[in-house]
Length: 495
Image (cartoon, rainbow, N blue to C red; front, side, top):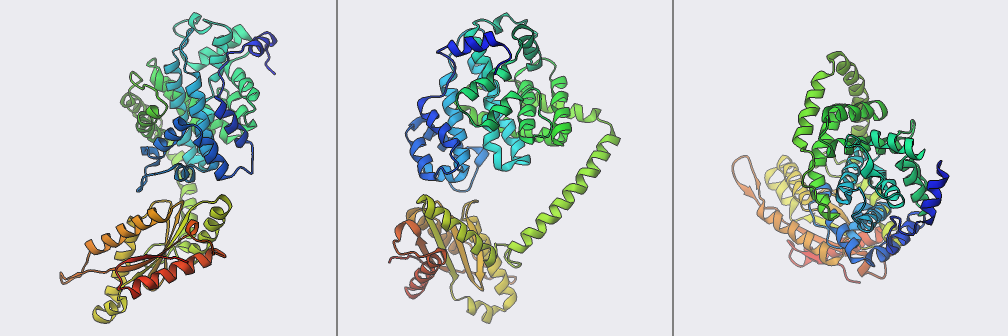
């Protein structure tokens, strides 16, 4: 309930409040459905060509830069995850439906600032809450939507504010004095009426006040401060100091890290704004913000920095050490690829996911041709160099989301999630060509060309697959067909 009953009545009676499009209402329902499947999400998102196109553009933007282009909506969903896809699609829908000019609000500027907040929240989330970075994007994007609602029921409200009231702290103060509530409270009321998830409603309600103990809400609040300094020329150093203090106190994010986020945001904002059909011309120069950030860093005392850095470095060193130990247990000591034990775990999980969601999955078996002759002719030291050389080429010709492992001896395996027969064949042909074009140069200058035979098995092409290891066995059978046919080629398993 709003603390201003009269404003609540006006909002309830207003039939023209900002609201999601029809497709977004179905997306909201799926957000609240813990059992929503990939097929359901793809079907709903696919009903809106504009949203589908924007998701594809986002997937191929610099923020999600990958070695292989995202070619279809299923691959985009695999990249973002089900929940990430839903919240991004919802963000596109709400922005598209709410960009009508009128009153005292420049709607393009409003959504530019909202997008800056959303990108900063996502970048903070990538460091602090990686599993929820898309949810953070949506929460920060919608945190000020209460302004649109207030302007709708009280036309000209913001046009009457003094010119100096450009920061959110001043706007919220004026709102509370005149309305006994602020736009964050109104925005939370609006999202609740849309049946949005409770976490999102609470994050918007606390977006300008912070919420001690709740990391998600604190990230949204810090992103709001960052968004404020991005769009207002007035006293950027004071605004940056406010954002830096909040980031350090609430999130333990140092100014150096915040400066990196501003640099990353400058790139992402330019690319992402076009996806949301927003014009970013005329915003505060990122170079100016970086200059002010560096000036601010010089004002911080050396003692404070040393104390903070010492504590941070100890924690980071311990975390890095533990991560290194975990990673070592997953890796092959010679090639640096994943080992067979980790491969088996991932294969079982990806197979289960593909089966449950009718999702394509390709498994690739790779065997280096005549490798025993290399050991016999040149010795095991050269043999080891050859394995490392080939492992690097194989890894370079797969996506970041693919899993490549050394299976044993000169055998390698790869899992290609969300990849159909044609795409898997393209990947493997590129891999074979790269091996042919990249000889191993020996110490005496001789060039040793190493080829490979490859077998592919694709889940959505096969009817008789009992389990994950049956799919792997079929890839192995295809590999033997490639070897029997003369090697240096690939074969696709056919039942």
